[in-house]
Length: 283
Ligand code: OGA
Ligand code: MN
Image 1 (cartoon, rainbow, N blue to C red):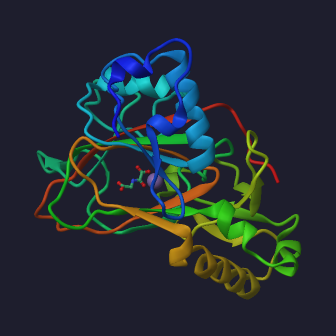
Image 2: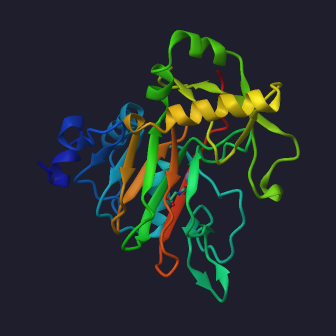
Image 3: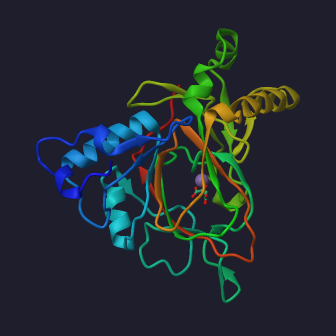
């Protein structure tokens, strides 16, 4: 089924069905036969953009790319930016490391080896990024799977009364490392509309969402827990076990993701880029 690259670079068109293969799960598709070490044609980029709008998460398996090639691929979808968190020794500033590896006693990346609960990247910022890309450079032999949740499907599956209850609500988002947060508290609508598709999605997750604005804390905790229980149903989730060379890009607006723990005796090294476009989430 995989087509040779040359047949996809024809200027006329890049038929999506020839190289986008939906996972068959709650979201996500695999993109086969694309070599990201090479520049992509406009038609390929347009097809990938379309596929991202449809599937929210795209897996490009078997890549072998340099840092510069990762940044070039990222730039097809918006402005790659330096991650807000500082990391030492980053030769290519747009690339942020997610890793448990220590060099001279210091972690070379973020998140260590522990479980990370559901979140949308950078939601603790007033203008969170839109897309994230993660490229697997070293993977553990077990654990470290990443799970994506289809937050559009989860919103759409709510009953009319539950949707009504969420109308106009905002939630406070905050990074667990105090110094990462802007001075002013950051709030976003509990339900956000995707600017390109117009689809609504739940935009709360246990890792970064703290409370519902203006609600007594017991009610806020109960509502958030109810939403988390709803979101984490298997019917909304797609899970990926990483192989070396996998690159996954995802749209943070209609999705959340979480990661399983893995043994700290093993190495996991992932290179992350993120795209910004000054967008403020809206209901
Ligand atoms: C991230 C993230 C999960 C993982 O890069 O934002 O949550 O599987 N990564 O490393
Ligand atoms: Mn993340």
